[in-house]
Image (cartoon, rainbow, N blue to C red; front, side):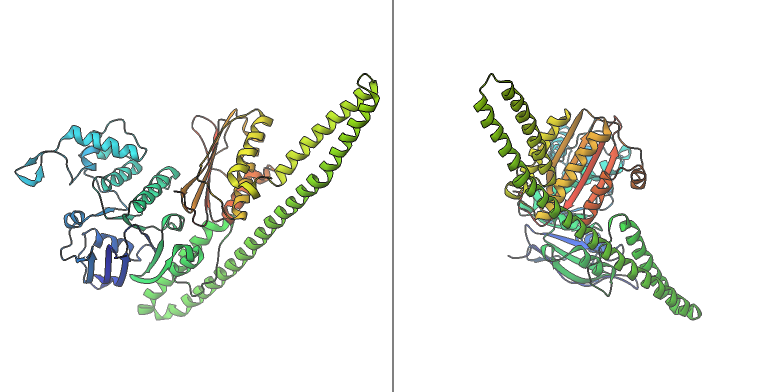
Length: 532
């Protein structure tokens, strides 16, 4: 397929500073390409060049087979390139509708075809329609831009890119709020654009977002393109190594609560390396000391990496062995104990039949049989908790439906269950982990929330991402959420959820609602699933 965009040996200098060096990039229609890299890697410079804000110092850009000779925002938009910038630039004194249609005003032409008299009512109708597709509603579309929040401004920038058909849409880290809602909205939009044959470039420092939605990843570092990988054929660890320029490409995945400190340590190491480079030119006396400090820091990071890998592997083995033990125990209970109890029940029924219906011994044996039936029902429920019987044959969706229905009957708590019909089959360990997350989340509601209503939702946010939400109307938890407090109180359920999520490379969020109640949100990455 002929690429819609070709970037050939693109260079951009700002004085003596080389921001882009011989960058090559091809993007085909209906393809989503991710740009990964740290701040200063050249992502924004490349995007601003495609937006027409920068003229390249050298190199060529071809769009739809034609060489771009004039770089300006008006020319790029006219060709069919829309850019959603990291910081939403709005006309502060214009209202929402006018900002959405800025440069694409609707209305009758004034003499020249490009000069139009804006039709405010028509633009407001169209703006409301576009915002409706984004699942957003404003009190008034005549609200001035300077009164909008950061997330609202970003929504306006996204809506502006949807005003007219685009052949290439470039997204430059617009998810400043990092809320699940806006994240889901944009990821769904990217999937829609992709399905319609629109090419998409996504630049983000969040590997979760890039792995969730892209087909191919391009890594930039210090203005150079250092790698290009198919998303399905690489790992987060490999991309992180290339982003930070680590000489070791071994998979290093920090576990659970060490995640934030791990990446902060990595960032500090990079800052120290940069400072060392500056000191070398003028502070030769301190060079040796800095090298020693960097060596010590590198050794500490290497030790941290090794410990993290060992801990994660130990935790993963522990969970795997626990699931195997549960599976064996459930099978033994079902195949041996329950079958033996059924045999006893049948024998008691046969004995009671010999005594006759009016005999007192028959009544006692019927009571025994009722007790045995209740015991069998309890054992079957225990087997279901140990190993959901439907998950192997019918998959995650059926297992959650069965468990949720039984949970609601046992607890008397009203449960509203929403499971995406296109859930599909996932790897066995992922399905089991997601089931355990749901199981532990509902168990926490029953034990600690005092709730009367619960909403459980399981859906895909992208072909590579599963989103689980459990929301109740109970008492909530103190904020900020501190897992160490729960451990001290003997509440290990939510800690176990967070550990499973971390081992799967997902995201975990727990928050109390202003009106009361607790919302648990989990996003789990997984291999691509075709969700329609």
